[in-house]
Image 1 (tube, rainbow, N blue to C red):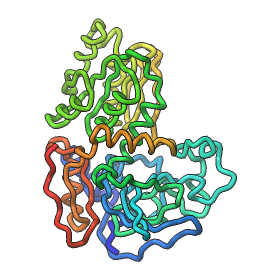
Image 2 (cartoon, one colour):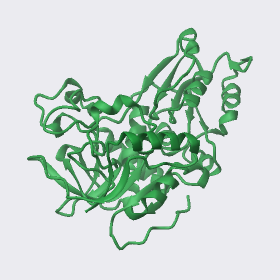
Image 3 (cartoon, rainbow, N blue to C red):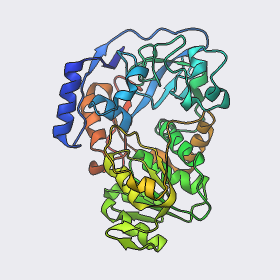
Image 4 (cartoon, rainbow, N blue to C red):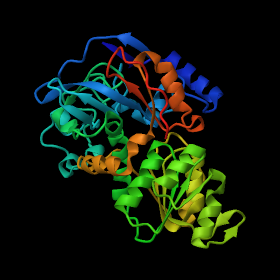
Length: 390
């Protein structure tokens, strides 16, 4: 089968990091990634199934990995070589269409009894992601034994599979994984009724978070920061009351909360801020617009950042992370994708052979009027779909 393979290669990793720095965010670099012919991964044991991807999304963490911007924190929980791709809708051998829940938790690893987190259903917090019957790997797409979505086939444990409703299109199903992340972020956060909530970033995670806030919480106002025209239109359509360019977000929060400004700093601010970017700049902005004793939820994957934490200390701000999901989050995510029509965020599909174009499109999605880019593996002969109207 054909697969995009990520090798452990320090020279190529270093070259990708340099290229990424020089590119200044204008597109993705490919690092130690190449298209190869390889054997399908073997089934690790009972309860495992072969999944043949139909669509496989490209997310921000994928891009950070392939262009060498991801944190070295992950090195102990990744095994090489791996096939990326964890946002997957695919078919089992019996034709059942499924969405993948990628976290490789205790059940998938054959560990009994399960760790405390898995016993609670908090699979994203599994304590055993480097143990059991598999090589280390926090998720499918980062584990040498399982394969990943950017290929003709991967293997997954029954505990990772969610059946797709018959009437749901593949483009909707591939959005269930990222939507589950947004659902988890909102459900796990105490959003007071009537609260002023700010969402930083209007890529896939940010837009899904706006949709989740409007359907799963009772905020008084949702203020979204969006850089590009398409993002702004979608954020408003999905439920944001105010949509501002990043430079105007603090002003929008100040007006909505009737805060005062002192040397550019707000005396009050938003009750809750969802940072769906995870960059140094976005975290600094979150600290600038959250109220004293407010909450910042870090939804976007960060790396090593240098941020002045004095306001966190002086204003007694609560900073929390939101990674992945609970197992039961997926049922809600399926419903939200359907209700909010989140399939419209899938902007373009590419065959695996055009992987460089796909990654470049994903890395520059916002400024090119796109949101979610995905690989289309439904047929080797299928021509790529043209960009979709959002």
